[in-house]
Length: 180
Image 1 (cartoon, rainbow, N blue to C red):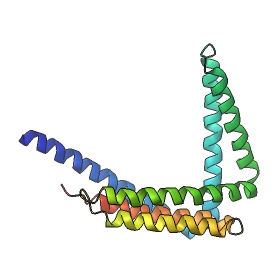
Image 2 (cartoon, rainbow, N blue to C red):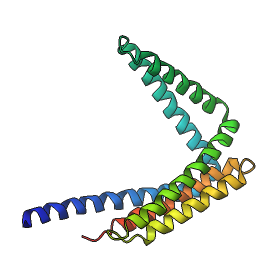
Image 3 (cartoon, one colour):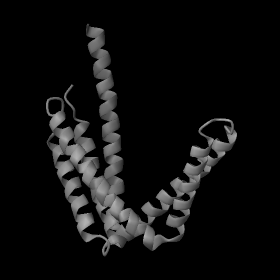
């Protein structure tokens, strides 16, 4: 019984270390993006476009490697769609920023709700106050993004994503202090 408790405590300690490390990274990235919100917005769009390009190319390669597979057409077409979207984002920065800002607002709304519900679900296991606060801030940011859309799209995505990362990082840091 004692060995099982030690293993459980070791896992909790490793998990706490991951929460702390992620929290610190989120806080650092959050501050940097908040300091340079327009650059943050453009960077988010470019990274997203490059990821989609890589995914699309990978899907097309996979489709041809597994040609005889019944899912060939699905994977191939999915790759083509990913590449088209990537090219659009990479070569139409203004339109891409407007679209991604709306998607960020929707994402933040959903993420905020998930965190709020998660805080209530975890209240017996961890100090859920920070997670609840993080969820409320995230939900508020989502509402503000959608209300400011599309006029403030050039800077709002970078600034609000930076704020989201900052509070998410603080939440992870607080979760790293879990009860053992």
